[in-house]
Amino acid sequence: MKANLNFNRRQWLAATFGFLATSIASPILAQTRIRRIRTQYIAALGAEGATSGTGAETWGLWKEDPGAIGVWLRLYQTLQKAGNLAPAGWRFDIDDWWLDENGLIMKAPEFPIPAGQYFVTNGEEHFSLLTIEEPDAEGKQSWSLSDDKTLANVTHGPCRSARYTPEGESGTCSPEFADRSAFPLKPGESPPLVSGCNRKNYAVLIVIGVPSTS
Image (cartoon, rainbow, N blue to C red; front, side):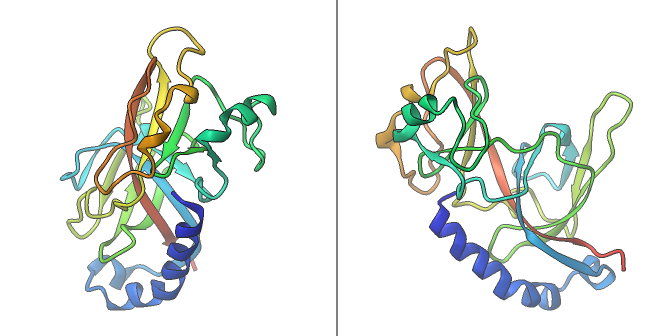
């Protein structure tokens, strides 16, 4: 999530939020008042064609744009010298780190995503009410999207987010082994595999509001 591009995206979201809320033919929107919030982002796992499912306990939430406070791969050694503390104040974890589509090391999202309802969009024409259920007795959480929207519908395509964890011993999965020449990624490309790391790709959903209780 590139900082300057995200700034423009936030401007777009602010300018078009009213249009989305009033013009999309949706039974949910007709019944639910929307409270605009500062833009947030969800890291989600699931089948692209699913409208509901389980496993939301593996989803995370960024309450601020992680790209805007990220650290470029080329500055990883500087990050190390700073005690793994990024300029924005978040701490890098060598055993659990994230990359975006531009080659920025991102702050990890908060896990698990809190139960509740979120108005999500792909940043274009798709808009849906996402419901995250409370954990069951085993800690599992279900999720569902309104208006027959699929996870692919509400995924913001330009954003990519990949999570890297060690294949073996702690400390063996490092951003220094990432291919910086792969960035910025082309449309549809995933962040590169990194030697010594497991990679998991997450979909990114943009959160622009929550149901109003007043």
